[in-house]
Image 1: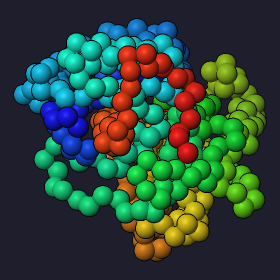
Image 2: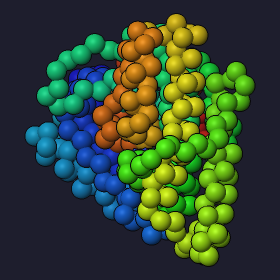
Image 3: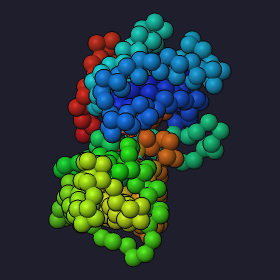
Image 4: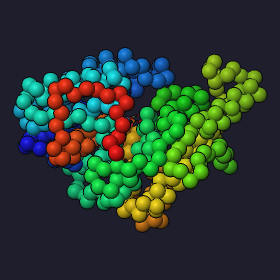
Amino acid sequence: MTGGLLLAIESSCDETGVALLDGPRRIVAQAVASQVALHAGAGGIVPELAARAHLRWIDPALDEVLEAAGASLPDIGAVAATAGPGLVGSLLVGLSYAKALAWSLDVPLVGVNHLEGHLYAAWLLDPGEAERPEPPFPLVALVVSGGHTFLVEMPDHLAYRLLGETVDDAAGEAFDKAGRLLGLGYPGGPAISRAADEARGTPERLPRAWLADTFDFSFSGLKTALRRTVEAELLAGGRPTAEDGGRLSPPRVAALAAAFQESVVDVLAVKTLRAARVVGARAIVLGGGVASNAALRERLAAGAADLGVELVVPRPGLCTDNGAMIGAAGARRFAAGVRAGLDLDARPSLPLAR
Ligand code: KG4
Ligand code: ZN
């Protein structure tokens, strides 16, 4: 960096994230304005509302972060912003804001891949947190978010070899759909996790898609199996369909939430641990909203300990979308000499560089 703090902005989906970083790892201050309540009624993200909310909250988020850091605009030495993938209207808000700031402060701009941000969340240090070593290479990283699910090998910084990815739904999307089916509301992930904690008695089993020996994932069969089970039980109980507001009893919801979660966690954990073994990884890194799932974290912690591999999982608030992760990836890109011009475009389908 040219000196000064790195300002990072995330606005790809439904969180407005702003963060100030000092160096590639240290968070000085950050703020996340969540739109969960705004979209809950619709049961999913409404893109136009999301873009307008980013516009509403980006200024106050920056003010909050500067105040918390005891900093002002001239302390900013560079600006990083998510360029993709994500919702185009939402991306444009953060990116245009970042461009205007970089131009007016006359500091460099760097565009960040949101997925790379989820990976680099594992490197972050909170304000006041003790220094700890960086995750060692080679490592395997599992990113499980609302829009993406993939497994990569990282031989070094900013280098990725795709091992596998979802062939249909992302893990978070599957949790969200299952949450709707069970009447648990949006977002489904945290709600399913809470409901699963209430499950009692013999665990039930829903199917898993192993896709032979690949590192790919598929969750649509599991979702269909859950839908069939829920609809059959609603019909047998003389209740309306899930779509028409029919709900199972709380104990049944808990049992099916637990079975669904176990199925997703089992496949994610088995494939990630196998990848770590095959690659000879020294660490496993986890990122994305679903990485805040306690069952997944526990399962991988046990498996990684058996393998003698370090598991690095950001705290839950850094797994879901935030500005600091964009700063962590942006700082690495920046150190590698990457600079963006003011013509940098939002790219809704930007892939992770390979
Ligand atoms: O990474 P993220 O905040 O946004 C995207 O980039 O997509 O991920 C959001 C996703 C949602 O699908 C949400 O249901 C899921 O992460 N999620 C969880 C949990 N917390 C969030 N899934 C399972 N268990 C959780 N505790
Ligand atoms: Zn994300």
